[in-house]
Length: 81
Image (cartoon, rainbow, N blue to C red; front, side, top):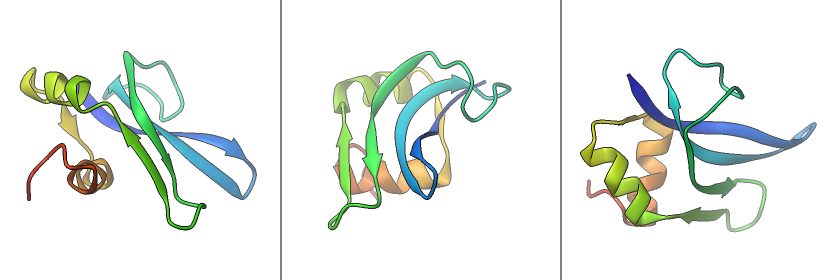
């Protein structure tokens, strides 16, 4: 199964994340299929960049977003509530 999830980047105590498509059996920071965007919660206000077309393509193919990614996609306007 393919999931859309966050991959942690950044230094110690300063996380930033990539929104990636990955095999559900892969490690959190392991190999991924494609990068869909970035999320930086440390900035005020938080910074969120998502490629909506790529995200829609993967969702139509059956990729399941994690709960956190689902909320971020709603905030980005890719998914509706």
